[in-house]
Image (cartoon, rainbow, N blue to C red):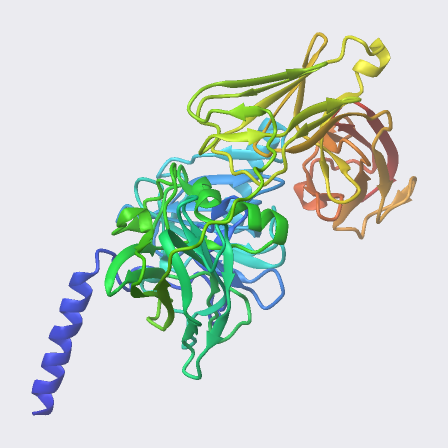
Length: 563
């Protein structure tokens, strides 16, 4: 009998694994500590869905990072921003694992990439080794966890991608995270689709009061509505060992028992990830920093994670009816939460409203749009926007008002300034800046100059201006002084900064020979590792040149001794 039990269990396990399209127990934990997440797969980030798991590293750097399986290093990328130091391993089964924000690579990979950096005389490099150059064995240490690039704190960003470079939830491959907590809801909203619809006497977005139940589910008081209505939720999930507000695994919505919407956060492509701004209520996010996930699909939202959409996710409420709208939220471990919204169909006695005063300039989304005033031109390529709208456009004293940044964009657009009225001296120091915050602080956006025209590409609306930068960057030694012995030093470090347009590039040499200095923009430091052995002389002349984004440059020189 005992044998029969184990036989049945084994058969069930085989069938369960056979049902999964993803190999189980093939990829190992990339760290040798219990996995605790600060970020989950496909959770909502600024302008994108998160493409992997952010694994906590106990608030420290330098933990061993292991290859999740055998394979070969197929790509190495080192950059100041983004993933920082990132490693890509291709495996025999066709999948690729990604390890990002590393402190450094393992010795053999570090040697390989440093040779590339010195060859190109650049800290930022990207290279694609052949399958025979950097083979990787199972359980091999390939790097050490860090905080490089745009990381907000020490952690390992880990991904699994398919052969089409689409990121997939690593938990589908058996990467296990302890989670017994159900998702929670912070807010729920209703969206009348048009002027013929309303919710609780409102024809625009309406927040509905949540009523938590003791079992963890939610409901609302009955709402009065009519016409086509959509709903949106603010919701997150938490795992057992961390307090981070992470993303969901699946959302389904039902109207009177029939499913009319599903969002399945299993896999996506990088080409579509920017549609996140159409999936959420972008205006609320920009104004209130809250991400409302819309459980209906508007034009241009082509996310592949959307499934079983009926009537674009809207429900149709008829007069004098009683209906129920329910939402099921699930995390990867199957913990689920339900939201129930009772709906009473009720016709609204129309009240005439004063017409809204809208800007005179109008954007037609499916065609090229050009705006021009004084010395400024704005060019929107076809399909920059998801829908037509009235845009607020004005120019005054070189300050461009281009609506509020509450409208999501599909692609970048161009801003061009004519600077022919400026002196030649000023023209060389001008750049286009976006104005941020209450004090409208100017922030550099990549600017090109052709003759008397300055142009920049950006993906955000808002306020812009011409700014002038005449101040050169600063360079200050951190751990050494001119004319001193540095024999006991492992590193040479300087602090660099530029107050307005920002650091564009830098170059450092010792005795005329280029040296690799790592730029940490979060700490404004350049660091040289003496183990590179770029110079073996006793007396050494250090020279560093730092240039900002409009060409102002500073040269720092010092002599040090070492044996």
